[in-house]
Amino acid sequence: MLNRSISIENMAYNSRFIQARRGATVTWKNNDTVAHTVTSDTGTDPMSGVIPPGGSFSHTFMNTGTYSYHCDLHPSMHGT
Image 1 (cartoon, rainbow, N blue to C red):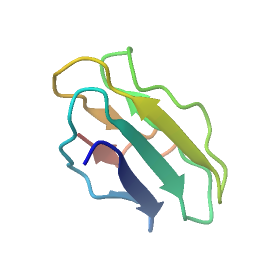
Image 2 (cartoon, one colour; image 1 turned 120 degrees about the horizontal axis):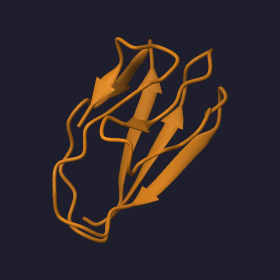
Image 3 (cartoon, helix red, strand yellow; image 1 turned 120 degrees about the vertical axis):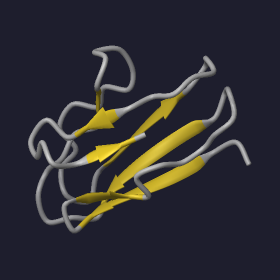
Image 4 (cartoon, helix red, strand yellow; image 1 turned 180 degrees about the vertical axis):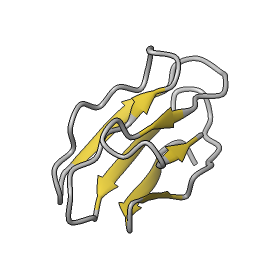
């Protein structure tokens, strides 16, 4: 499966860890009642900006690797 989805709800990324193939598009859907971000821990990709409640953000990963990210607005939220 190339495309993957991550739900943001209850102040968490669900799932916190996923695997996707190179060239896959991952979509984060904000099902929470507050805004969130998807922000790379290394300052590269992915970088969503603010995702409002009900909004989504998609990123296509063109390189193989491990990508760790967090929410700028809620520092306890992390995913890989």
